[in-house]
Every structure is written in structure tokens, then in C-alpha cells.
View 1 (cartoon, rainbow, N blue to C red):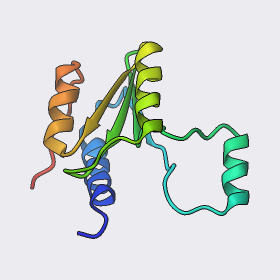
View 2: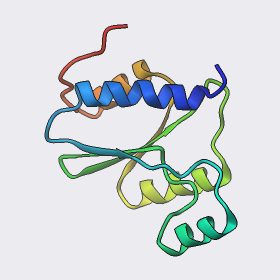
View 3: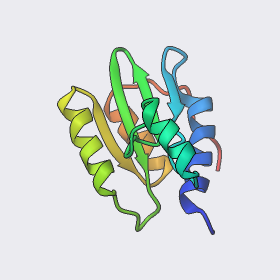
View 4: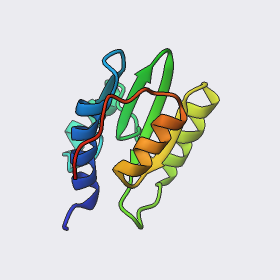
Length: 119
């Protein structure tokens, strides 16, 4: 697998579409990828921040920042800083490496999932 985090995000995206309660809102934050210096400057000037989590879920007034990592992936310094800021602001933040981890995490926070994708 050449891009394990992308493959994980695609699988988790399918899972979220199929399983999150209809009252939940979520989105992906596409911070990665190659950018020209000009484009990076424009994005920074318009509020894009390094270290933003890959996914955000909002449910019943709670904010969940979810960083997706391959099995051996580690958080960058900007991701660690973002995690600290989200938690200090009252949100939740986690690193997820599989759909099973995400399912357990969301269930542990009381999100009533509608179902599961078949393998």
C-alpha cells in the first residue's frame, strides 16, 4: 500500500457516511499535499492552520478532532500542539489507526451509530 493513511481515510469516510447518526455533522480537513509557496501563503492568510486533524465530528455540542495515522505513523509537533489546544478548548482529540478503533472511540463517547460496513 503506497498511501496507507489515504486508504484508511477513504475507508473511514465510507464508515462515517453509513454509520454516524443523522444529527451528527462531520467533515475532512484537507491540509496535506503539495502546495506552491504562493498557495500555502494564501491558505495560511485565510485561516488554514498546520496540525489540524484529518476529520472533525460535531455531535450534541461536542467537538471531536480525529487524526488518522498508519500503524507506525506519529504526530508531528504541530499536530501535538493542535491536540493540546483542542483539549484545552473543551474538545476531544484522538489518533485512530483503524475503523475498529474509531468505532470503539465513538461508542465510548456515546454516539449511537446506525450500523457497520461489512468487511
